[in-house]
Image (cartoon, rainbow, N blue to C red; front, side, top):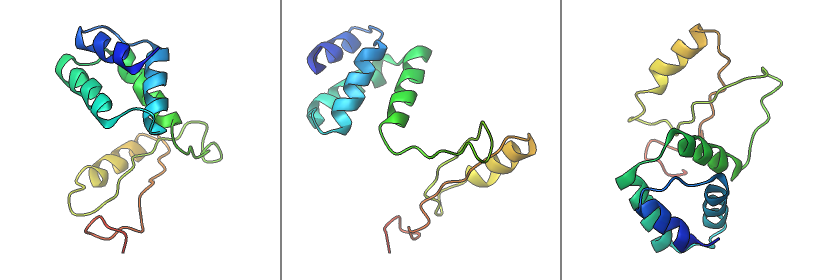
Length: 121
């Protein structure tokens, strides 16, 4: 498997397999894929779209690519609406109370160390 084959497959509107998505996300996050190759794949994804299956696979693999918090002590199923906050965050203030009112446990994770400019002060 190689990135060129994956790019070509998406160029011609093929559906990426779990292994292809794992390959891309893994190699990209480790810096083993050139930015130009990642840009080409993302360009074809933008142009041709993703199936629901691909969206789910990408979400899972991207989620696994970083640190994962164990929130099972809060509830067996807890959701997070991540935000850096700031002036432009209009979703969090509305969405989280609605979710909480539905009885769904919410862990609000944010980058508290960032100032209004989005930089670490």
